[in-house]
Image (cartoon, rainbow, N blue to C red; front, side, top):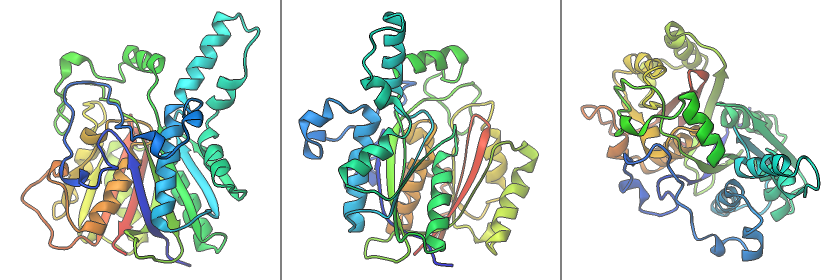
Length: 354
């Protein structure tokens, strides 16, 4: 089967990741439980008349997708695959609000049309006149991983050569209110959040959009090779070690072969124990974390995938991501990403230096 290369990786996040110098300027925001993505100057990428009709996640995705294709040197991808947990939340809330306020009568269809989860993939296809395979995966915590697996299988079986894969989610006011009531989001009194040894429940919520071009052939911009990806909905804490070991064994690797492991510590005392268990079996690896830099959200693994590609390409690890300072590899050949959302949708993604 053909190898799968990541020929571009672009991310809009809570960090200024579109800025060329972001790698050394990242820092955690400890002042809020709701983090906003750093928005680019959209007028540089999208006509003003179109911007007004786009929700936040569509705007972020349009820019990230276009920059990803530009970096990869492709005009029209062979397929567009997007993963999202909540889709266009803002438009969904606007539509439902109109339903209630107008007693289900005299409704304009605009917000409903723009609220569907596949709006992002559709808008990107329209903008690039792409009539090829177009699919959106919707899952609470493993939408990106499903998208990556779909793209990987298509490339390996000669069904496509260049595939645009994305992960995107936005915050919306009413949804955040509900998350607060449910206890999903931390209380302001629990700030600053302790991500590695938390004693409080809840997370700091973020948002973002990450897009990648997966290809069957390397280019001058290739950052990594996608070796394998897997996911499972339910996993007991005492099954974490076997889950990881069996995944690596299928790829003829052991835990000692992993140079860096990227863990999704969220600061939620109820579920971070999974990561602590995983961390124990990677004593010889660079142990990293990322959600203090992007916040928790349904497709936060998009930020992790982006950073893993950056690390492999630059052969450098940002100090802001390090858990342990005592181990620093001279060469990083492999990175394993382990993530879950609220103790469910556990995923493993293995990347290697291309």
